[in-house]
Amino acid sequence: MAKNLLIVESPAKAKTINKYLGTDFKVLASYGHVRDLVPKEGAVDPEHDFRMDYALIDKNVRHVDEIAKAARAADSIYLATDLDREGEAISWHISEILKERGLLKDKETHRVVFSEITPRAIKEAVAHPRRLSHDLVDAQQARRALDYLVGFNLSPVLWRKVQRGLSAGRVQSPALRMIVEREEEIEAFKPREYWTVEAQLAHEDGGFTARLVRLNGKKFEQFDLTNEKDAHAARDALLKAAGGRLVVGDIQSKQRQRRPAAPFTTSTLQQEAARKLGMATSRTMRIAQGLYEGVSLGGEGNVGLITYMRTDSTHLSGEAIGELRQAIEREFGKQGLPEHAMVYKTKSKNAQEAHEAIRPTSALRTPKSVAAFLTPDQLKLYELVWKRAVACQMKPATLNTVSVEFPCGSDAAFRATGTTVVDPGFLAVYEAG
Image 1 (cartoon, rainbow, N blue to C red):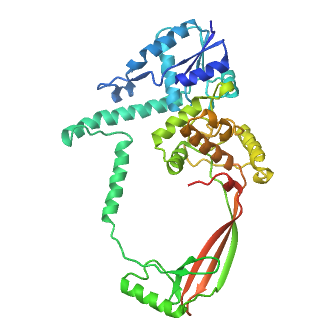
Image 2 (cartoon, one colour):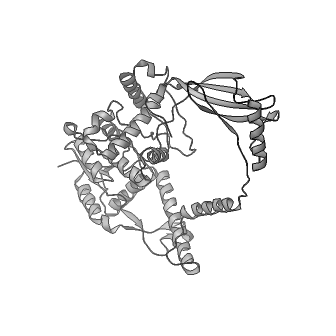
Image 3 (cartoon, rainbow, N blue to C red):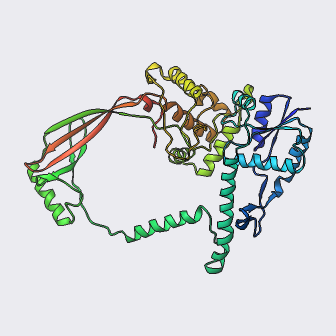
């Protein structure tokens, strides 16, 4: 019989981890949250230090009973739910339930966290457990209490005063206000007419467009031409001054470097999946969850292919960077590597740098090498994550921008600009947007 009980959230994750830990461990799933606030008035009591009244979630009662039965027989219990606020709260709820049932006496209880489901990461997490973070638990409970206090109290008011079926919420109500304010700005907008002037130019190497940048001896601004009469007059004067041709007056050329985008956070993954793959947010996260929890790779068994997909950090571990650089050298040669690793600062003030960005668990596992084992959607998303992570550690692209000015008479000019790639760097792999 297994001496240790390890509890995760999903059965798919349990199946993968069970294979890594062997017979000394029994791995069970909580199937998400196990307790929630009772659905009645008074579940959160602001008059008594915001006391919260919890009850087991009906659909998970049998899973809780199974965990309790296994806990009774185990010597040690490892709480291995997700590493975010929600995961920490689930671990706390499970420990409270087991404590109430008298199942934690003389048992060691550990909290373990990992951002990827690989043998190394799981074994390292189990070897270095920590205590429950009550700061994270409190943060989750505060969020849940606000959800309840706002939604439970305001929604009935909307039913009485406006229309039944409407709802208010901690997030949706401020978001709705932002939408309304933006709509009011749009409705209050006073459109202004303006005209631009472009020259369609022909050359033996191909045609191109130049835009008017100077008129009547001064810089051409957006609202310099505000009606059709003036615009047509300017056009006629320019045509007359040009006499059917424009001659190059000035050429300016400069090189610049473009850095690769940071590795994915949850929000940037959702945005890029929508832009590049046409995936809705829910679909993206569902596919990412499957890639994180594990995919059967034939003889290798179930393997987690990406790190935890709920993160606001762009941090990469030293080990991950080392493997990314190794993959770049193997796939694209040494010329693709910068002298030093690229480092990205997380924009969010509240980001948890202990978490990592979304990346492949092994950069050496290319999309092509796993394509036969993935569904079309899984392959598309994995390729997106792999390319973004690899690109973020490649050399910046070197671009050459050329600006050509064409005088038109003595007091007007047109300008055409173009950019060529001198060294593609990371663009050989991935371009954001």
